[in-house]
Length: 185
Ligand code: IMP
Ligand code: MG
Image 1 (cartoon, rainbow, N blue to C red):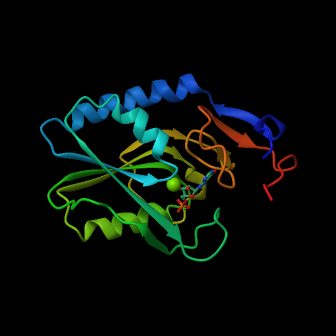
Image 2 (image 1 turned 90 degrees about the vertical axis):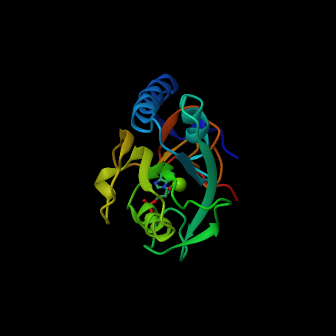
């Protein structure tokens, strides 16, 4: 696997900016969910680091659950519009105040389908918290209730987001220089 320094174009969001924005988002969530039945759902795998950092600053009682989805068709980086549940929730969300925690909203197909699927289970409320919003790429309209950063139309990696399955672990968000990147074999 290539050292990311070989293809890192720029650090788009450094660690300290990520963390201070997450603090602000958590503050907002703390205010908005007072007295509610907050249930945070992380969409695996990209949302993992974001959920872990966010929930440490949510000082209301809350529960968490995980789900994984995959898009139909090939091309992991291109949503086809159709999404299926690869790993379903463990808990029933009926009457809960569900907050979906996502790494990035790109075309919007993933979140749109997840919202549609979850709505049929009758949560009390259903909102979206995404760390990144690649707004230029939106193909379907999705309501975003909490947004960390709006980013340009560039492929990003790190802080939960992978590049061909690797680099989830980095503490910052970087952009890729496609001329210098070699996919793993
Ligand atoms: P959407 O369905 O097009 O909104 O795509 C959302 C999913 O595609 C995200 O949950 C990510 O897993 C993935 N994705 C989209 N853009 C990027 C990116 O720039 N880097 C890494 N993953 C991305
Ligand atoms: Mg994702």
